[in-house]
Length: 167
Image 1: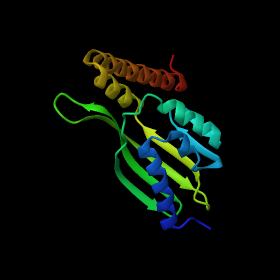
Image 2: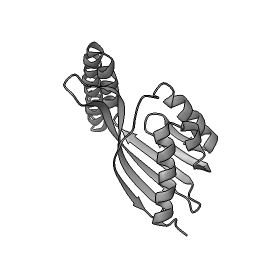
Image 3: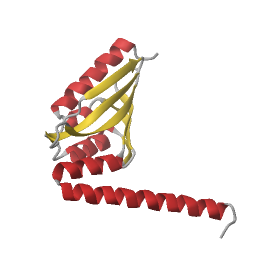
Image 4: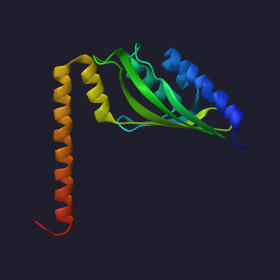
């Protein structure tokens, strides 16, 4: 049996309420005992207590951040949401220091989170955080981003040449 759309919405609303209040440890209680949380830079965590430890530790110091939802799609047992990570303060010219992300959440038949995967652009995170802290750091991070892309492209080029037998 799949969780109904109404029950899925209610489960997601519980999640959002805790998320908006910054109750990171309590969010872990919404996961199934063997639930999974994945995030591209920290990997996959399995089990409620591992997820709790990660959420509490990774969100420490971010109490002033907010996470406005851009849109949400709710289906039977599944939710996809597009959100912003919004830092405190505003840009000199107006607007927010923020970067987008997407979450996919799958619920089990009991309304517990079986799996959540969060996606966001790590380079954008570094750029926005740096900009929010200092213009000098922002330029340094942007330079690191350009260097990083050059290294990745150079590595791809070398792999392609080696694979083709070119030395």
